[in-house]
Image (cartoon, rainbow over all chains, first blue to last red; front, side):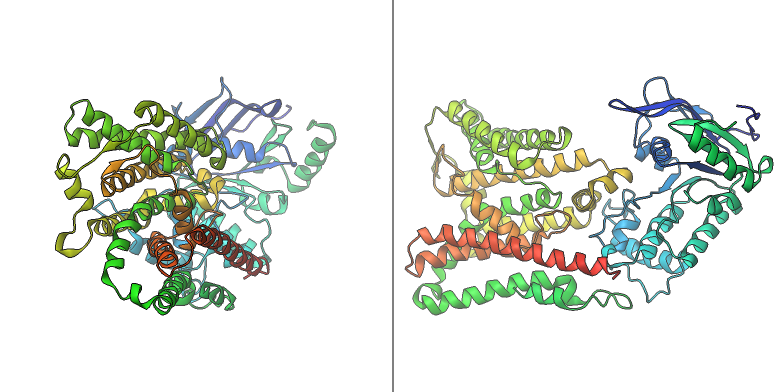
Length: 261
Length: 340
């Protein structure tokens, strides 16, 4: 790699060191070093099969890295990384496949895996309903009459479903929000809303990882960029170091030759 | 069934909460079917169905399978099935008999029985969820395993369970306080407990989520292995409860206890509106459906129809309710594909 790897100051919120992930014979990630610092938006670019989703699911604790790989959270090495652990530490993800349960009402989806309970230890269904209604109208701009918390997710449009997935990530006051292709299948206004949401994360001092095929969506909102290719980090750029045209040019080159230079 | 008509209504849920009919339509439908059938039986055999005794018998025998059906509803909502509960009924009760025969007090016997049921449920749940074996296949296997173990342990012989020898057990499982058969009181208590477990605890919430979309549930950090295993343990416990209740009711533990329970229990769950595809279901539906299934049984026999027809009726109930669910499910999915 020709460029010096830019390194912001401070301790990374999350850091992967030498992480590999093998599924049977297929090596999806090999020797990945990856870090997200407080208050920055990191873009993740790469072709289909470059390992973007696998990387995200490893950060999220869904996949366990192969032996030798390390996961560090706020400067501490964590061995028993799991989805529940990651969410407890304030990492939320908006998945490409949205991770919704479509036959369930909005309120069940909104609090999936983190259901609030009353002091008796019972499910606080009343709170789940009212909070869902409030969040849907306040954060996703649905007028309060448009979406009822008891509505089943399968009856909603693609944008509305994405709204549920994004609002869910936002609600839990995450320190790090991961967005895996959040604009896929969205209309222009919905895409704009989603990009505003990403900028908003930075405005309140939280971090985000933003994955998208569309470089025109990624480039304007991110601070740093990782380019993945065939399971390896092919390059890390500070946005100040590289123009969008230059980046597009390099992405073409990496897709063709597997090398950035 | 009228639940079909509720699905036919255009989904007008954009500006309004789902209507009462849409939310509770299938449950209303089940209750409606129950009422119509009851009126039919009254018309067919008025002498029998206006006699209070039949309702007494009915209230004593229906909970024998209804209690298991309530627990089985949890397993079906997680998208699985348990076919081994008839054998767990027998094996749990056998554990009770063996402990008492060995000189243990009846409460010790009860503890042993429920522990046995829980272990059986845990084995089913662990095999299904941890190893990802289809439950339909593995619970047929464990069904023979548990039944075989029980037959070996009991050497194929039964145990008398008279009221003189087991007064406390008869008070728990066979009395009629205030003129109400205790079996139905137990069923109501278990229904209330199950309703809270399903609708007001995290475990219940996760049962729905795991059954709806296991991948999404796992991505959001839900431990589907533990959720499914606990659902199977619940069936094991309730099967044991029912095994004891059924045996005390007949004053005798037969090594064949549980045979004949498979069809009516499963029919109760599906007639109750719980989806074969997982993700949706209701214990109240199962409760009502159990009494309908019980009524079919009693009604066919007392209306003077050959008892062979009961099996035909149960088979019909399972097939028709599952087909209807599938049609409704498809209709909803087609609506969502068009955007709404």
